[in-house]
Structures are given as structure tokens and as C-alpha cells.
Amino acid sequence: MQKSAFRAAVAAVAFLAFAAPAAHAKGADTRIAEADLAAHIRTLSNDAFEGRAPGTEGEDRTIAYIVGEWAKAGLEAVPGSATPWLQPVPLVESEALGGTAKFKVRGRDAKLEEDGIIVSGRDASVSLEDLPALFVGYGVDAAGRPNADVRGKLAIMLMDTPPFGEAQPRYRERRQMLADAGATGVLVVATDAVPWTQLRDALGGKTVRLGGDAGAGPQVSGFMSLEAADALFTRAGLDGAALREAARAADYRGVVLPVTADIETRTAVRSFASHNVVARLPGANPDGKAVLFLGHWDHLGICRPDDDADRICNGAVDNASGIAVLIEVAKRLAAGARPDRDIYFLATTAEEKGLLGARWFADHPVVPLGDITVALNLDTVAIAPRGTPVATIGRGKPAYDALVSKVAARLGRTIDDDGEADAFAQRQDGWALGAKGVTALMVGGSFSDMGLLEAFLGSDYHRPADEFSDKIPLGGAAEDADLHVALGRAFADRKRWPGE
Ligand SMILES: [Zn+2]
Image 1 (spheres, rainbow, N blue to C red):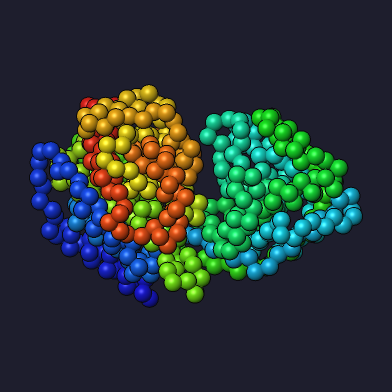
Image 2 (cartoon, rainbow, N blue to C red; image 1 turned 30 degrees about the vertical axis):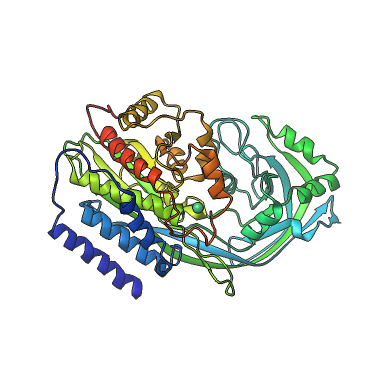
């Protein structure tokens, strides 16, 4: 009820905005000020938005705000959409209610420490007996294809990114690939980069995946600590360290273990819809190519137990800041001289759940992915002060790097090309588009000064303390916003950018 009434309200806001379009000022783009960004961040990270969790009233408020601002700016809904401004994203939330995994080695019980393994089911109730197990290393070969015959089996797979091949998929994608290849279960062996207790707490609660036509994963999935996995290998007469070493080879084919598993799970499964917000600025002289700006609107929502004083993770920096930039960039691009090419604006949902909104868009694009000449993601931009050099996640394509450098230089920015920013490549929405062949860049100062970024990640990040205050550094964000106006103009200009 509430939601459909709300959708009608969104349409009404959009209609009114079109009835009175913003005045068009020609000439140079006005600079984006810290105060412009602060106003949006203050609103989006207000407690009334409840931390912007997908599928909540906080979502309704968030997407209404973004649609309202983009409509006021002069963007339009993508023509032909059955749900103007919004792209529904089907999500499935699973909460493990109980689960056990018992192993046998050569038919004999092999008991493991119970707190070293977590299992959850795809469906409400799963009961599997004598599931044969195999160790698949990273689960893929150098070409990114499943590396072993996993049909009807329990695949034990390493979490870390494969140390071979380019742009290898993350463990979630690899788990789905093994499921698509017929694996009944996939157990992910935790990396020693993340403490097991932290991982177990994070995974023990609710998990969210894409629904609809997206792959639903294996019947059972779970995680093992490195110690639990090694204990199982030892029981099986194998050496865990040696197995992991062998798995580093790009042509590793896995090893069948003399192990079977009995797995039972009970899971609360709930399907719901969330939404990407999608808008378009029609080009003045289109050539079929398009520029895409994106940033995630979602955050963690209510993230602390009932008795905590502050229970809301407001996500002011992560990523109300990026959405604030997207709103102001849209205003400048729509108000100034109209660019040649169409420019799309996408505010994604469920980034925090694993880039889910971006993945859904990549699988159901409103503009053919091959027509997107560049995607520019904005995430966690309020980190650095003015004067911070410009780093780019996704550097390495000379023509793109040259244009970014030129545009940045014209604004008096210097370039940071040490490549450190790429450590975050997989942790942002651009990755989901890059995996489908789109050139996706994240450009700006926030990923240049690693000291400042690490300081944020080690303190307020993903905590209730990531909330609006005058202390949030917005100088760098304002500069990055101006940079994105200029980048939008450059990449959408048929003379300046041939549209690779
Ligand atoms: Zn985040």
C-alpha cells in the first residue's frame, strides 16, 4: 500500500518538475560548492532515512529525494520504462536459523570444531547426505571458467582472488559459477586477510542476493575457517598448505577428497524488491554512444542491537557524499551547454550487499552496455581536502588516462598514477560493469591519499559514526564534483572523445 502510493508521488514530483524546467544558463559551469554537497548529505544521512537500507521506508525516502532532485535538475526518465525513474531490483534475503555440516573421511566420522564452519541453505529447509567433497582451489582457470567437474558435489573453494589471469571474479561470482556448473554445495575457505571471528559474525546474520533471473547459488553454501579446512585436509591425509600452493597454478584442476558431508540447514527466506534510480540527460547531437554516471544510494540501515544508543549507520560519507555529487553534476550538465551524447545517471541499490544493484543493471541495462563509452562511479568521495591529486581506479587504457589527465590539468589538478587506488577496484560498483566489458573508472582525490582513506576505513566507516557533521572534509569532494562535470562534458563531446 504505502509503496504504491509512494510511487505515484514520485511520478507526480517528476511531472511537476517537467512542467517548470530549470532555466538554462549558457557559458561556463558554475563551481560546485561544499555547501551544495553538504545540504544533500545532511538530508540523505538524516536519521529519518534510517541508514538507507534496501526495502525499507528509508529506501522510499531516499529514492524519492534523488528522483525529485534529478527531475528538478532537468533529467528525464529513460523513455519506454514501465517504471519511470526506477529499475526494480529483486532481492532475496536469507537468515540462517540453524545448520550443521558433518564430515566423514573414508566413511568414518571426522568431527571438526563447530565454530569453524557456517552453512546456510538456499531454500527454507535443506537436508543432504553423503555429498562427495572436492577441493577446487580458486574454482576457476586462467580464462575464468570453472576448473573442475563439480556436478552433484560439495566444492571447497578459496575466498581470495585468484593469483592468475586478469580481473578474475570475486568469490561470490565464482560460487555462482560453480553452482551453474552443477555444484550442490560450495564452502568458501576464509582468507587469512580477514579475521575468522569477524567474518563469522558478518556472515552469521542475514545475507542478501539477487532474485529474479539471477543465479540463485548452490543448494547449500557456507564458510570454513582456514584452521577448520586444514583440519579436514589433515584428516583426509592431505596438507592444506600444499593444496593451496598447488591451487596457485592457472591450470589447477582440483582434487577429489576422500570426504563426504551430511548437511542440514534451516533458513528464513524473504523476497523483496528494491530499486535502482535511473535517469537520462538527452544529448544534443547523439551518436549512439553514452556516458554513465553512477553511485550507490544504499547503506547499512539499522546496524546495531536494540539497546545501543545510536543504532543507525547513516552512511554520510559512504555514500550520501557520492549521491550529493551526482545530483550537483546533473544540475550543471543539464543547465549548461547541452553535451552531444546522452548522459545516464544511475543511483544503485544494494552495493553494500555485494554490488547487487550494479550487477542487476549490468545484466538488464537500459542502454546497451556496448554503447557506454565510459562509466564514472562516485563512492565515498568526502575524504580529502582541496588540492589532493587525482587518482583513477581502472587506469591503464592510454586514451582514457590521457583524457582524464587533460581534463584534470585544465582544472589545476595534478595526477596520482601510482596505481595504489586499484586495491579498491573490486569494492565498488564499477567492478560489476567492468566485468561486462564496460570501461568503468573511479576518478578523484579520495583514493589518492591512502593515509586519509585508511584513517576513515579504520574509524567511522560502516559504523553509526559515519554521520553528517561539519568535520566531513568536503573541499576535495567539491573539486571532484567539478572534475566530473568536466569529465562528463569531455566524454560526451563527439569532437573531444571519439567514443572508444
Ligand atoms: Zn560501504
